[in-house]
Image (cartoon, rainbow, N blue to C red; front, side, top):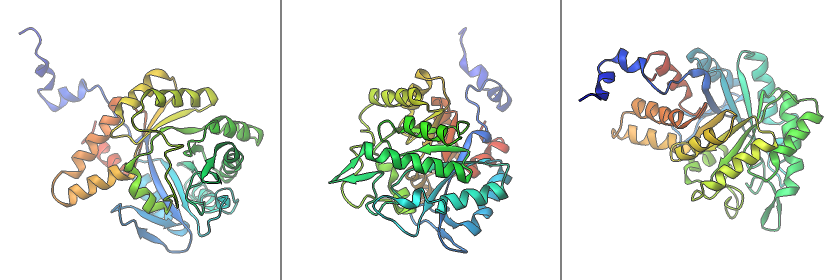
Length: 325
């Protein structure tokens, strides 16, 4: 045989030299939950090993992440008060705004991404302003603008709108520019699907909708071409980074995003993916570390430039130790 692919698999050094997909801790983002109160480090029942932190305890995790080599964190806030308009999301003294100011002061070498959505802050649990029984897309946009500016003023390095309202990237870009934040990039949740993989997150963030579901604004997971349309619209409106969420079952759309755009592509390995790995590993059915690494490589191989994952710290250690190339 002239062609013997196994020639390039004979040793670790050979496999490493010809590896097509290479990963780096620089590309990892860790999602972190911050909550009101003091001295709070509360484990999330459905996400073993993940916690809600009060601002005075968040330094512990940020120090661990930094020591492991993770330099980027995405912040999600859990407010003490919720209302119809989600006012805590744009309050200058809101939980995320205070967390950003604290984190930027105490960890200046880290990059902080602010998730921009209203579901954690609204009394009804939806991602926008309610009109009747529906989320009013256009009435929501001014609120998203206020949230974005508030987060930028508090020190966010990146604004990440996850609401899936039509036209929100253009609206946020205009608001940021007008407020003097033209240098702040937008990482858009461009292809965010109405997915059953989000269950544990809603437990973590106390953000389950009080009625109905989010299928009228998050995407139908049957649709691939529509995802491409959403991605291209966000780039046209000014998105600097696009995202596919979830990651594990959406490799085809990560690849599509990579091929149809010239901006960085992020993939979010969501709470359900994490919870399944933890549960199967706890039952002795899988090797947690190996599965975690394989899932990450799959996302990078599909085309992800950025990987958002609750396993960020562990993955960074595996990268450093040569367990994942």
